[in-house]
Length: 128
Image (cartoon, rainbow, N blue to C red; front, side):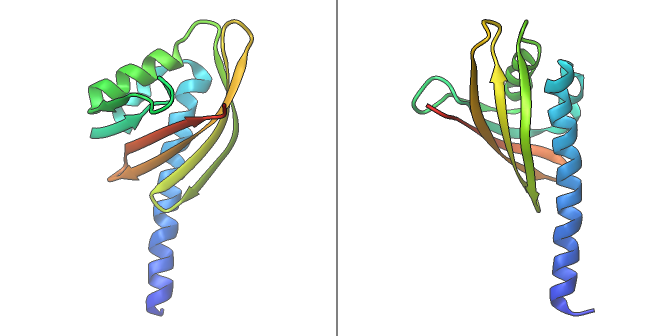
């Protein structure tokens, strides 16, 4: 096996692991059940949220990230429609549409990074 194939195989394994973590992460919001977040989020996780505009708020640490995502996942009358999840190595891009309780929606994307089997970074962006 050549060096290139070894590197390629390692990247493929990371992609498979990252895809599974993103599937479990997305399930939190699809099921409105944040119980899996404690296992998915790293102690040093950082979120750059979509609000307030234009810069968003930064959340540092596992507790802050789990708290924010738990609140989003359990928002009464809300839902996420997943449009696409794309994984490459330790990175993932999630395109989504978020429906608010009042029936309005907005579209956005999360840029995610995984290390050692946990989410370490999430940057959210919305249209408009």
